[in-house]
Length: 237
Image 1 (cartoon, one colour):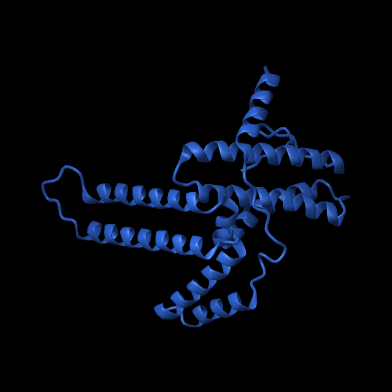
Image 2 (cartoon, one colour):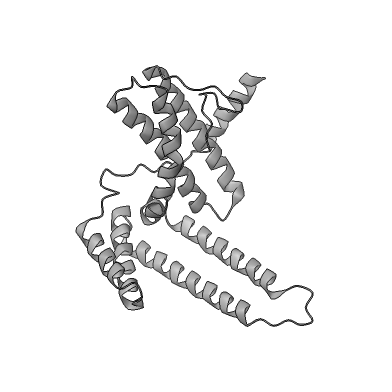
């Protein structure tokens, strides 16, 4: 039975390719243009025009890093502007709504409409840019959370294996961190459709655990067996 389940998962993994964003070595190091734009916004956080100019500059830097053409960049801006206006209008209508004889409160109705609009435009963006291209724009939003998730798992692993070399520790940490980062990014990229999201997350986890188990075996890593743990002995979030 277990073998059949494994084969089924393997077939699923073949059919549904999980996308994985590998950060370039300099991805977490902002270039001078990005630093300048960010600093100008930090100096005047209440100056809307300065903040907007900084965000615009960073956007175009990310578009260039992602390899977007000028036409695709324009199309992306058009979707973002349209989405922002639609959401702004819905939020205004929600605040102004007054329905004394309505069985449904305006908040419920407009929350539904806002969610639908967000999903609609998230889908449009996913149809325009690939997963990797999308990640260049949003990865900064998720690095800190990925580190917070990866750190305790890595520390547990490192504590139980004091003989690991520096290079081995770095590779294991990168595997764990990359898994959590891509889990967060995938959730963001496919937030509009749980039917697309769940299989991608399943394959992402399957591929990670396969690579992690292979690396642990190669390094003779000992893991703590616990109830509900995965086949590699680790309890992943």
